[in-house]
Image 1 (tube, rainbow, N blue to C red):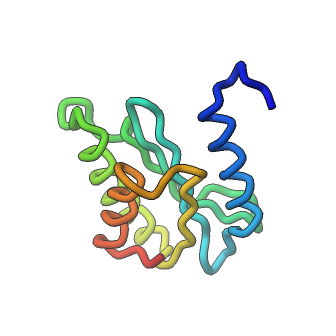
Image 2: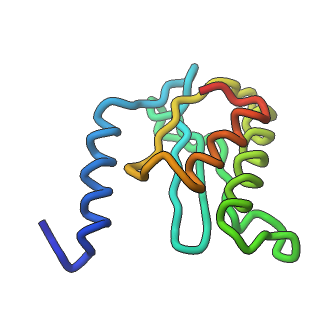
Length: 121
């Protein structure tokens, strides 16, 4: 194990690979993948059978003057925007891939917001 990349990141990568061994997106139920940096939140809906991203959204897609400073509020808006884009692309049901992150905080808020605005997990 390489410690130059960081112990926390390596632990997350191990969790991520375990999760990805069990989860896969199909044409009927694509995978909603989440990535969070220290400052922003990003997510995409991926069809793994084709290897194609169907819909993507992130904090940087929000208008700069309207972008909230807190990551929790950003995650809420990103989840809402992702659900709108997904419904426009005729995606209603997804498999949630938290990418090794603990399901709390902005990851949880993003998932709840997407559910509230029409996506089914």
